[in-house]
Length: 379
Image (cartoon, rainbow, N blue to C red; front, top):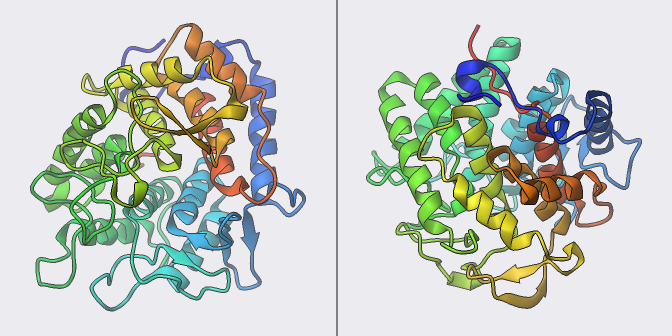
């Protein structure tokens, strides 16, 4: 096992292989999973849909809408798989239909649109913007820049500029609190979502964003690692969906518990550890999460208070939770890690109405655990 992060070593741990799966079967699973999500040959699992105008979108099948979350996820998946055509179709759709050109959110993207492109909202969700930005940087470094809007690097820099400088001219709100360097749930509130915190992304933004903003992103990475640690329960490791800046659960509208958004915290810790191995990366949180779930029946996954007390309400995305608990193994070891990996490997993609979120998390986990969620640096 390498001692330094993949950013420095350019080596990515194939955790699935280390746990006994052959490279051939891992590669086959990866390609099959891509095909099942991104081609029309598999209607029960498909979530990417092409249009006739060189565009395409990721459909949230549970809500029948298109979200910046899914669009940016799809772009990250495409750049990891070297699928430039699909990346460009997604980005062109997002710029054409989701981009906001006026109002207090100008420069951001509408978080939800109908499949026909009509905006359902004129507000953004910051998890989409941060994934857009890094996917665009990776595209620039992997394929080179093209004409607008495919001048990927400049698009990323402009977007990150808005994310932290909006409001300086009374023109809206930034996506990060500029004092404490923490990402907000949405720009016009002052609380956060622990699953939005991507310190490994911010490390890269501190290298590639506009030079004047690079110190901000370096601090944001450091502060997000601290925030992830303090928003997780000290025994269970579970995080709420919404949390105040001090890390305590924000119960507004019932979002102060461990539920669908929260699953991503384990992924973010895992990939941060894989890429950078910063001493402040709270890997112990992933150990606690795996310990909490290892003896639970996936058919009985629930919404939980962060202390582990279950609600009657079942988990809406159990396959996604299986996937994120497995991805946690990039930063853990031992029997719980092995069991989490085996459960994931033996779980198929989700079919039916609610498949979108589960299968996005599934594919990210498969990429990461096979050593294929990579950093693409400038040439």
